Length: 198
Ligand code: G3H
Image (cartoon, rainbow, N blue to C red; front, top):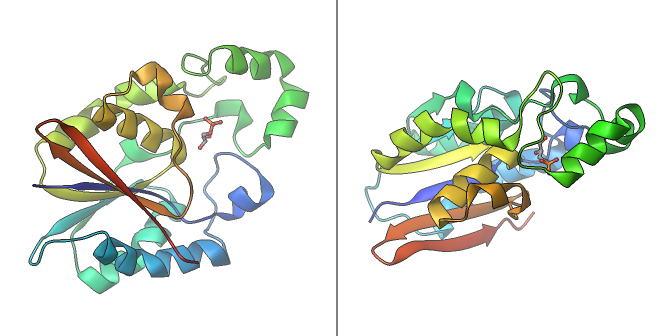
């Protein structure tokens, strides 16, 4: 059967300072994850002669994370704008502390209804689910794909395959430096997680 692998980008410079959004580079640790990713993928079990297509967003941190994977495997790579991180609008490049300080009402509104809350000038999780529709359609007709993208986006894709109601996607656990392997089976999607040793 075919599988879909999901990974967040390696730790970014913004992850280190607690800022959201932006288009920062990966950190040294993030680079260690990028280097570990080809062997992590092998360890997860790839049948011989299996071709896997690499999908990333258009942001630097996902492209940098997939770089060694691409170089070592020679797999085809596609960059999708639709895989870019949830757009946090006016809150882009702020920390959660700064958001709570500058936009206290928004901060509370998001806490009350994280799925529907739309950042000013940005997106909600609901918006992300809608913009992911073409991605999901393409995934459904693809063979093996490894998707290197962002936390909010992965939470939505993960929920789709695990049959979790989309409203619950904002709370799915998708940690850094962990490769998630999903294999759709007749009785449901089988999930395995592989944490990088870095
Ligand atoms: O800004 C996007 C983050 O990756 C998602 O974090 O939705 O839990 O704030 P959050």
